[in-house]
Length: 273
Length: 262
Image 1 (cartoon, rainbow over the protein chains, first blue to last red):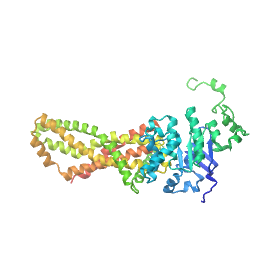
Image 2 (cartoon, rainbow over the protein chains, first blue to last red):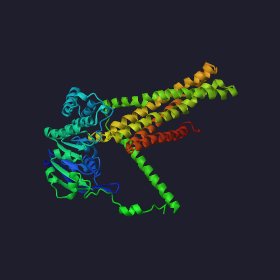
Image 3 (cartoon, each protein chain N blue to C red):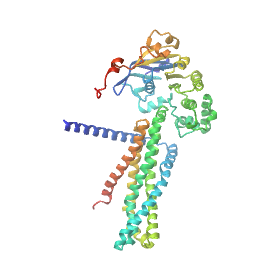
Image 4 (cartoon, helix red, strand yellow):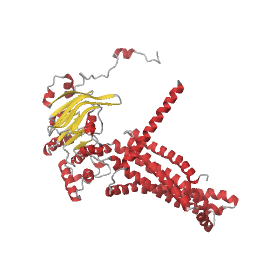
């Protein structure tokens, strides 16, 4: 497969099921190089699964997942591990190694993959930490960091190998307004400054639309809408509008399907009857 | 119909068991076979030797002391009836070197180190640290499992030997210092009865086998656990239960082979 210079990630006709539950059905997603692309959707719509499919941690039932011209599901184990060095991933709960300091966490991929001298590793780590504003916190242990700081430290670690693609799994979930603002700004800034491509998986509409170039909205295994943030805001689809504006009722009903309310109240439990 | 259902259920359990065994073998092969990374691998091994081996020392030494003392006391009360209390050293040494040292040492080791390794790996899994490693292009099986496995295998025989030495001292304190068995007879009988090849080496082989099995169960339960708090609890319990059963079952088998009817 020849590298497609325009799209860094191309997903075509993706099918994925887990324990007979269909997660993705005929999904097509393209991520253009250098852009910030967001994948949004309600909780449980398989957004994280999508990132795991791109990273090759899960295999699709059918369809293609191409990253940097490499057909991820068809790669051998070694090739897959090699391809992953081009990807950085930020997990929802940061996934910092709890037995290592912030400095050692960021240095970890460098030590594992390169034979750089210690002085150069130190410089590289300090540069990454400076970029996320945590150079002063390098001797702290992950348990001593606040949620926002932990996420920034994990971001520095994901950047350590200078990936061309970086994926964020719910970067804004559970963040206070200040660290949310910091993260929003960092994601956009780093994407442009380091000439990376960013995929954000999130359900925080306001933050995500403020930095994304293109948005895919998925639900029930299908793409419900896609386009630039402006185009989606004016979408004619009632579903997309309900999601973007956070309306409590609409095509996604407030009530879980149930029988008629009045009948339900009148009905006697079996034991009593 | 009931019979058919039972056979069906049995078959399913059997298939699940075989599937798990296969997974466990694959997991271990994957972790251990491959190009070794001597320098970093050695550092990780030393680190794990500390956590798995050195930190188990206290419980091993204390238990050994008490077990030796109980052996001394029980052995004396029986031997003295036959006027054979001078054979106390022989009794203590043989029961320790052949059985109690490797077996009780391994049971304690499974409770202390095995459960800790399972809980640690399971927690790494549930906090996505293993996934993060995978996404960095680093194989978590090689980095996480291999050092713990080797550390367990190296520590177990050493801990069993320490157990034996301390327990003999415990027996000596009770038998000789307290109950008045002759010190010379105690040591001389022990020396003549214990054979290096038959007793000590066989005991070491047992503890190497137990160390391997405990660590294998521990790392596999950690890797395969359901990443929830309940799942981690279950995995840890399973490590202790399965290891204990495996130790006792294997002990019978190994004893039959080593000391069985000739």
